Image (cartoon, rainbow, N blue to C red):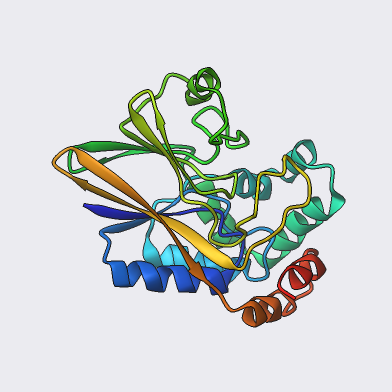
Length: 241
């Protein structure tokens, strides 16, 4: 069985279309989204429509939860523009869109031909938690909150990762919509001009993980950022200049 993991789309329709085209060429049985679907980017509703058509399992990211409880964003970021971006995104969505977000799972387990796959956004404990290559093993254990599977996949950090932990594989597919240069711990990131995802292959209890990235057209990314009046328009346009 082959599944594609995508995460942190952040309203970037151009990147999502490119990734899904690449995934289609690879031939997968299922696409799985690990959350943070539509805030921060220019085309939130279109991204939700694509996921709806895919009928893909979606995990509730922290930014997805901000759409359901906007007050939460103030405990996450001190930057007013992030709260403004969440409010702007809410204004683009209809009741059916928010109903879809309410249906996202906080975590989920799947069986891939004998290999258990545990899905979450930040960690099983919190969709706000960062799991990095440098996170000490004991801290990873606490974040997993007693959960363990042969393959465990989450997003949130926008940094691709495959890490062995206690005999299991910890995977982060990176970000479709806002991949970044390095971990910034809340500071303004350097946004990169490619899109990231991962492929998990499983057969008879064996599993392998491939991290993938594809280049995107900077001019098209800039044009998309400038196509609406969303609060991060200037920042994203400058990133793709």
